[in-house]
Length: 164
Image 1 (tube, rainbow, N blue to C red):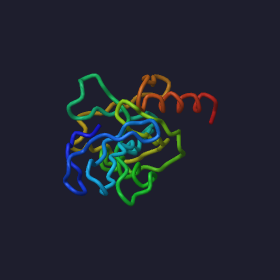
Image 2 (image 1 turned 90 degrees about the vertical axis):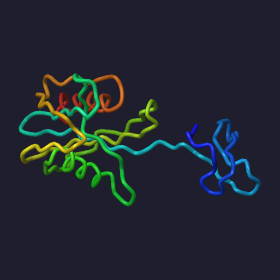
Image 3 (image 1 turned 135 degrees about the vertical axis):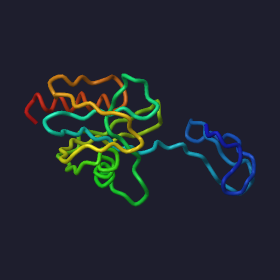
Image 4 (image 1 turned 90 degrees about the horizontal axis):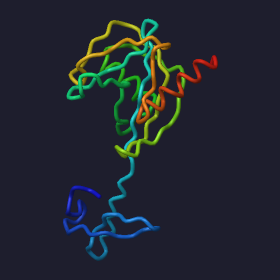
């Protein structure tokens, strides 16, 4: 359920409404019709190969040993491909090219839909304010984690081992 208690359309109090067996926040005012669908946000993720290694990044505020893929939200009017290239440029300062789509993954814990891409990048790494450090990990030492973008890493490794 949303954090807000009032309708963004008419200002009346939000109540709940069952639609097709699911409960949603909805405007209680007659005739308004606003429903907060709480659809997942689209996130792009980049498995970035740079100088023969995969870049894992640690975001600002993350635990010291927690690293993940470069990710970001799809912005209005932007294709997923443009978004993932932009995120690599913004967060790492690298010029990147897409080799292919790894897959599409639901991340229920954060209400996100992750579109993961296999990318190759060149240039000198320059971190933006969102990241505090990176690690270059050899693909043969890379290990997937069981949630979020880690599932994409596992699929990427399987494709790579199969020669794909």
